[in-house]
Image 1: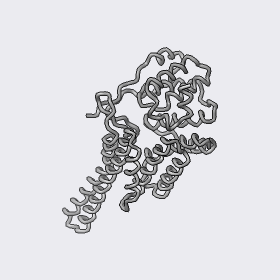
Image 2: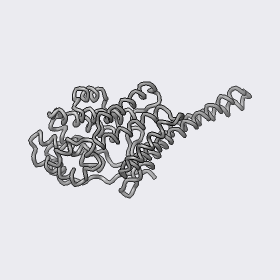
Image 3: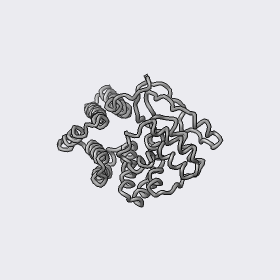
Image 4: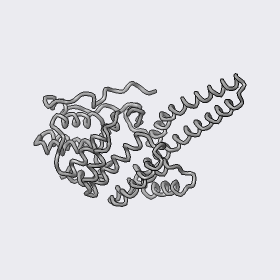
Length: 311
């Protein structure tokens, strides 16, 4: 059962006079389903992460609700057509119902692909993960969305091995599929790809391109994607070696990064930001918390930041 979400960590700006509260705060426990406008991240209610495969399946169920509403409308139309004796209306309604059912099944299948890959990726089974991806790419029945997701997954494998040039090529293939078939991609899939492109361009030292790509990304709604947007902003600034964020905004981002266990690179980036502001005590506190939370999930994705945090 999905319970009410705690108050958003991004809901209110944090002022400097609340620094003591930041220094002592603890992350809020995860809830069943983090919302990001249309739903994005699944966790179990006891405080631990569930399998990524199940998480993405839950996302698929959430997206499928939109399709179910269309299916019900079409089924209702078919019933009205039958009442009025219109054979064409009946056939049209049944055809629409079948189409909606197929759409639901495909969305669930897409989430299962990403979830299966992430389970293999997190276990360190890179060879199995790549073989899984290649099987999908070689399948004649794979759709543009599935191929784009698979290219993104292969990019993660390349980034883990430090091959950022090849990783960007895979992301470029995913972007091309998005531009060729825009109707198949929703806001979340576009945002996740954009954040990966920004990170990869910074790793390659292509900072002007990274900034251009970031500035073309409007700030999204929902905590998960907003945290990604804030993180991408600081990634670019870290690469440029210059903090552009005002001090007040840095306190707000620090609050957001400390308020959840799933802030990823935002927490160490905030540590860097406070070092740039000359707030040594706050910087060291955030750096220590980032190390304590474990950096292994992102260290291969952003080696320069990992080197800074472990200096």
